[in-house]
Image (cartoon, rainbow, N blue to C red; front, side, top):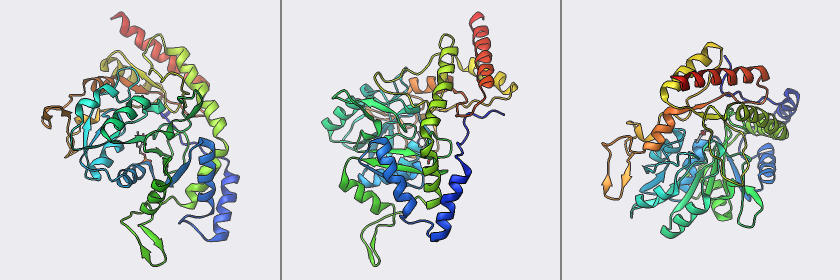
Length: 381
Ligand SMILES: *Cc1c(COP(=O)(O)O)cnc(C)c1O
């Protein structure tokens, strides 16, 4: 089966050399050589002030909420991977779902303000598939109501956005904190891993304390903490993958362009934030109906291709999120599911196509041909 994504494996000898280094030192984890190197190189590569690597993208979110002392309600998007919201519930927060924009698939700023109450402490948007949110509008709302902004930037490695002065900079610079995932399936990876990015030095220090049990010295424990550390083997993988990141991005971009040229007249594509770069982390296509999608998945499975319904279902429909609410000005609607109609509609029709650096060109052609055939049949009916 051709999977939707495949972990990028770097040069084995290079990784082996790092492993030899780890064996020689006998130091496997706890803020060591390779992790330090990785953080320095990542900060430089991304052009961000503070980047703190952690064990995974979910812990990055949890630590971010803790570092910013969030409480009560958090306004967030239902169109995401479950981790965006499950981490909120895990931290005792109440997610309040605001609906998304139908063409960018990101949290729509105009849907945020009506949901703000005296209990709201933060906004947690997602740069969906790496596509930057309306960061300036979201910050303006946050400033007006004194709310924190935490971007789940799990998909946004390497995405650049045009700043006010016109120059391009990493989208990770926005919000009080941006979090990212370095899971094996993500564009840049450390097997398992993630990071917390912030411009605020004192917040960065607080995060470093939080991810190591709150320990400050051999016999001092300053505050509550958790174990969210990245180990040396993961840092070694990160250093190897980072060496090849330009190549990875170029190869992904070629596949993405091929889908774009081959399919843009038969399916809808995500509207990308103007003036920002596409990191080609995902290749989502929006079908006409769920019926068309299901038929297409069937056809693709038949030729050995396994696309993924990502994100599906819309998170506002999940019954097991005990605190989850769909907010409105007049109160709560725990019983009324699926109020985020745009998110539910997009979730039913979105399909992520296989995209990874060494995918066979002929497979991509075959996927395009299959989609063209199936969607055109759909049109005639
Ligand atoms: C992958 C992902 C996460 C979680 O990251 P992990 O490293 O797998 O814990 C969170 N949010 C989004 C949007 C993701 O895609």
